[in-house]
Image (cartoon, rainbow, N blue to C red; front, side, top):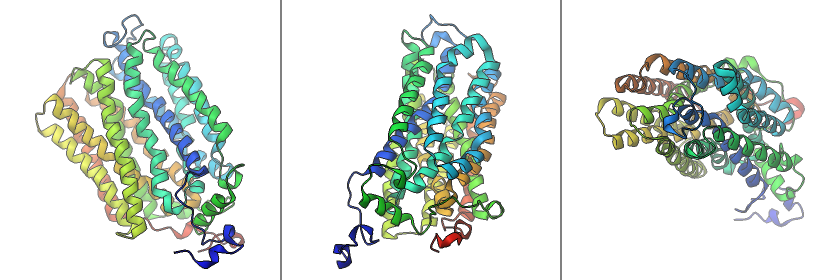
Length: 466
């Protein structure tokens, strides 16, 4: 039902205006950001397949140089990205909140794209040390991406579409893995060899940077062509929880907040368990399941196809539950996170306990990673629940701390798996991931909440309505 007031001259500026289900600028922004996340994760995982071809030329085009890197060296190269990624997170959140996320996104992927193009030179002529430096700087640049995206979404995603738009953008991370893993395998086997992986992905990154620089905007207020109706719809939707101006960050209250520490622990355990699987699955498929580089890429991508589909499905279900008030937002977050972490843990334990066939192993790995899609409607959206005004900083904090475990994950695998063809050693890795998922989600179920925290609000100029 329309309120009769909606047909008055105040129509466009009234809060009773309801945006119809039509394509708008907010959808264009989220679509471009979705492709940005695809690019971002593509640049992260290209080395997971690439390093197999770089160090074992029999698995790909044999006409290209084979690098004499042992398991320890490969683990250092794979983990070096996260050393850089760790450094810039919190600073990135502060800068994005102060200046907006647009140009930090462009700069982050611009630097990453150029360095990706120079990856073959770094590896062949610089060796492990230069390669680690290259990946570390890429990590520093990409440390700006998640905080910047969170700030952008806090300005562009209206409450009624929050779950769908946020999950859609972040689902680009899984779609990036889905696209890059098989593509990297095909490129490594092509006439361009393994260097083509980095030339192609780097060039595509620079194309995205150009498009985003021309079409992206920090907020509806800064967008040049957005309709007045859509602008007011978005701004009115967010006016109760977001400020029009940067606010001083309540550092003390943030770090004294139990819900915040719950998010930190959830993010820590997610990164450790997930990145152990992500960075090492191609190696497991190559040495244990005995697939060539082409099949390896496609099999490694399969869980991410399932994950991407489930992220989209879960986000629509989540918005439906939220709109119809079927369960509280807090219980929703816990439900989705439990599906992701406890469901994934069960699949990994099953992989260890049962002497599965090759098909069975692929099914269980696919289940473990596919169910992980629940975190996108679980704890990963929780930052925007707790404090929309400081969403970039909160994600910067949790992502920065969590990436300590992203660094440790590949190193832990390098310590446990001394023989890549030893199935029992891989079993220990899967059990460790399962235990991490179980413990982290137990803490989240007990202490997590989706209630907006009091420190999100400020009385500065009476700007935010409490």
